[in-house]
Structures are given as C-alpha cells and as structure tokens.
Image 1: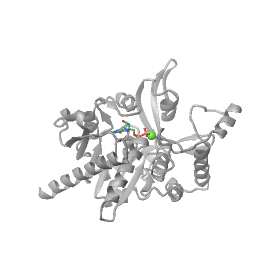
Image 2: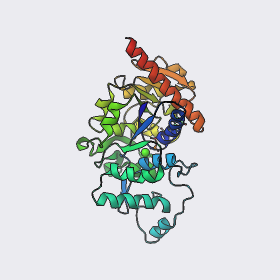
Image 3: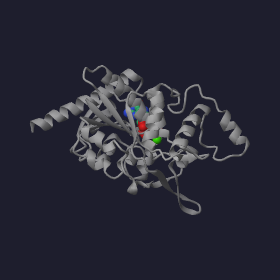
Image 4: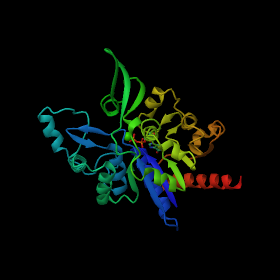
Length: 323
Ligand code: GDP
Ligand code: CA
C-alpha cells in the first residue's frame, strides 16, 4: 500500500510515528511518502534552517528531544552562548550544537547548487526515518504574517511571529511568499498520483498543510484521490501550539468542523474528530466524519488513530467502487 502524508512539524511527526507502526504490522509491501512543509524555513546566521523537515527526520530517526517535540535529544548550547557573547542576532530562535551540524551540511550542499530535495535525502540517509521525506518544493517559499504595529501594517517572517512574539501580535493574514512561482519538488506529484491513500495528519491547517497546498499543482493533484484527515482541534482548541491564532487570522472558527469545511469537500473525503466532538458528525457536508479518541499519547495510541484513518479511507474507496 502506498500512503502519502502532508506534514508539518510536531503534529505531523508524531502521527507519522504511529502510521509507521500501524503499517509495519501489515503484510503488504508498504510505503510512506511524506510531503514536508518548507514554509517555516528561515535563514539564520547564514544557515538554512528547515524546522518541519528536521522535526519529521529527527522524530522518525530517533534523534528528537521527545519532551519538547523539536530539536535534538541530549543537546548542548555552546555555539548559541558564544554567538550571544558577540551580540549576534537573532537570539530568539534556539539552535543547539547538534542541530547546527544539520544546518551546516544543508547550507553547504545548497550553496553548491544541490536542490533541497536531494539535500533532504542525504540527511535522511543518516537518520533512516523509514519513510521517503520530500520537501513540498525545492524553490524558496516563506510564510509571512501580516500584523498591525504602532507604525502601521507590517509583515514579518512566520518564525518571528510564532517564536519571538508567541503568536500574540494579532495576525490579519498570511502570505506564502514565493509560492506562486514555486514548483512541486521532484517526486511530489508522482507520489500523489501513485498513492492509494492521502492522509492529512493533525498538523496546523493554515501554516503547515495550507502552505503545502499553496504550491501550484499540489491541491489539484490531490482532488481525484481519497483524502482522509485527522483533526488537530479538539473541543474548540488546538491540542498544543497556537493554531487558533492562525485560524482566527484567516477567519476560520477554531473547531474540528470548521477546519474540515475550510479544507473543503472537494479535497477532504474523510475526517476524524475526537469523541468529545461527536456533536459535529453531521455538520460537514460532503465529508464523512467519524469520532474516536484523538490524543496522541504514545506510539501505540497514535498507531490506532492512523489505522482508523486508513480504515476510513478503505471504506470510502469501497463506497466509490460500488457507486
Ligand atoms: P508544527 O509545525 O510543529 O507546529 O506542527 P504541526 O503543524 O505538524 O502540528 C501542530 C498541530 O498538531 C497543532 O495544531 C496541534 O493541535 C496538533 N496536535 C498536537 N498534538 C496532538 C494530539 O495529540 N492530537 C491531535 N488531534 N492533534 C494534536
Ligand atoms: Ca511548523
């Protein structure tokens, strides 16, 4: 079975751990392709940092700081302290010593003209994540946030808004800078075309999955496929993080049903919501909604969520065939 997953950082990576476990127990030759969000990418100290790709790679490769959900385990911060001693900016983004090595290798390869997808494959050769991880595009795309400051409207990099300001500056919208001219990375459209099932993990619907969908060609390639998503919103709040601030900025209510309607019935065939959101089962026209526990406590509970998403996809496909 071939599964394609559109993933952001923490929510995407945790779901993928469960999906990998669920598919490992299958008897068929299974393959997971991950299309990773690069809208969060940022250049710091001359180094290209790809937070979402790295979170997926470190999580599935066993190198993640599990309490935090991002960054390396057993990390030290000597380089960061030395940079601060020089007054080097910015100091609001934490990069550890082990993590720095990843960004140095990536930046050197990019500077030599190697595309990001090839660089990512090279980094993954060390981590062996057990999935094929492809960035959504090799072209530079950066999510910017429109806010109003005392001096008038202003646009800042998503990371500055999210990490430096903790998403507390009221956002009026997002812009996927560079997306219009971006092309899907090699392998993205072929993987979608060959996929039996497309899964949307409980990633941020605006700045993670929304950013992937902003690359021309990706959304339209998904439309004919069976797409099943897992809600990142439980009981009108994100499980962790500040997805509510992102939804508010684009005028979407923070609820499992509103996120499904935002994806739209043309894209989304099936949607898993938490048991506590059972009340929304009939409020998403054109999408089949099922309720079950959606907290990803550990790999085995997450594997059950992933299996439920796959089961829903099978049922929807059978329905399609019988029509
Ligand atoms: P980021 O790039 O690190 O922000 O991570 P993602 O975009 O992949 O995922 C963030 C989303 O994951 C947030 O909106 C959370 O609500 C969601 N999330 C985190 N943990 C859980 C969980 O246990 N269950 C569900 N359903 N969603 C979760
Ligand atoms: Ca992210």
